[in-house]
Every structure is written in structure tokens, then in C-alpha cells.
Image (cartoon, rainbow, N blue to C red):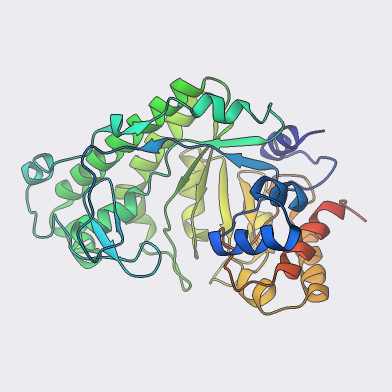
Length: 348
């Protein structure tokens, strides 16, 4: 059984020869791993037993330019500064109180994403791995960047039509980009992988009512798009989101990624019991308390505990509780985690 078959069986809630494994890594950790193993990134992924590979388009905005001192700019014109993607230096739609102000904003052109090499990039894996594709589509984060988080919440109550229009315009862009990707890729992509962090350490970032009104319709649009092309749709979503999962499942979401058991209400036992036959669960091996602060023996023991809870019956992909394994994470701990996943068999 190859990786692709193994992953698709997990989405069908069936067990396989081994539990599928997911490796997400920061550039710093990937570089550390390549040096430790004396190989390239593909060699690292094969050594870890990663069952996934990802393909993406290339962003080619005409005249793309970042202001001096800033480090990144989103397709929606929001510039950021600081570590990594940093923080927005301004909120271009702050103060917008009418739908017309939303419509008049200079929205990006989906054709800026070059999809011409998507199929070739996916096909080089010869259907051995589960291929992730589509645009990341972080519409919630873009809405925060464009309005400011506090103002976005206020507008949900005072100007709901503005928030709906904003979400529609943001997702119009992402929808078309991913549609272009899927049309170019044909059947070479297996999973539409998108990302929006709806949770914090202590709970979801909004209640179920607000989530269902403002954030579920855009999410469902993207889920339906993936399904139209025959793809499973998986959402990366950090934090405490257990009370939002029924809404996501109702919308048709196939998988939820990077479960964080140290967040409020995210007991792996409860998640498996309540949702383990309704949505694929991905992650759950504690990145902070186990993978960073533990030693290899502790990592092996804790990884096995997670697998004992999550693996039976399928519907689970094993990996860290945060997709971006940080550079300070000991390489030996990650190797111990992946070796334990590879060796594990349900019931042994």
C-alpha cells in the first residue's frame, strides 16, 4: 500500500498497514533536518515517512513591490513587518461602513497566480503520495488585516452587510484561484488544503452563532468547490475549536488539521469519541510540551499514547499539534515521533 492509498483509506475511516503521517516544518527545522540526514527536503520527508506532498501556484502580481522596512504583502495589499509574516502596518478598509466601499476596493486578480506547472509538479510523484493543492485561502485572517480585528467584530453587529460583502469579495478571489488550479491539475490533486485559525488557547475566537453567520458560508463555498472536483477538503485550524466542529461537519468538511490537545476542550479522547467517524482528525502530538521540551524516550511514549486513542478505526493522520515544527525542536525528538508512527500497529 502506498502513501496515497493509505491517506484515502483514512478519509474513508478505514485502517491501513500503518497510520498515515504528516510532516509540516518551518524552514529552520527543515534545514536542520537536511543537515542531520545529509539529504535534501524530499529525502527528509521520505525518512520521516511523510505521506503527503503539496503543490501550489506561483504568485506573479505585476509591479509587485513592498514598501521599505516592511517584510511581506498580501494579495489584498496589506503590508506587514516583523518576524515571519509579521503584523499588518495598516488596515486599508478600516472605517468602511457601506457595501459600496467594499466593492470599490482594488481586489486582486486571480490570474496573478500562475498555475501552468501545477500538473507537472503533482505528477512527478507518480500518485505515490496524497497530493495537497488549492490556495491556502485564509479569508478570516485577510478580513482581520483589512478591517482590524476589533472593528471586524463590531461590524458583525453594527454593519453585518459590510462583513458579508467583505467575506464574499475575499473568497471570490480564492475561489477562482483554486478553481484555476484544479482545472489545470485534472485528477492529479487529492486534497484541497486550506487554512484559517478560528481558535485560541482558551476557546474559539467567536461563538457558534457568529461563526455560522459569517464564517461558515465562505468555508462551505470552498468545501463545495473541492468536492466539485472530486477532492477531499481539509482545514488547518489552530486552537480550541471543538464547539465549532459540528458546524464544519454539517458544511461537509472532510478533515481538520493540527489538533492541539493542550487547548481548552480539545481532549483527544473526547474528539475521537464525538467526531472520529464524522471527520478525519489530523495532529494531536503535543508540539510544545512533548516535542520541544521532552526527550526521545518521552516522545515515543507520548506518541504511542496518542496513537492508542486516535488510530483505531481509521480516520486519523498522525503528526505534530502545530504544522510549523519550529527550529528549536530537537531533531532527535521528531525522528522519535515519526519512527514510532511508522512502527505502530493498531492493537499492539
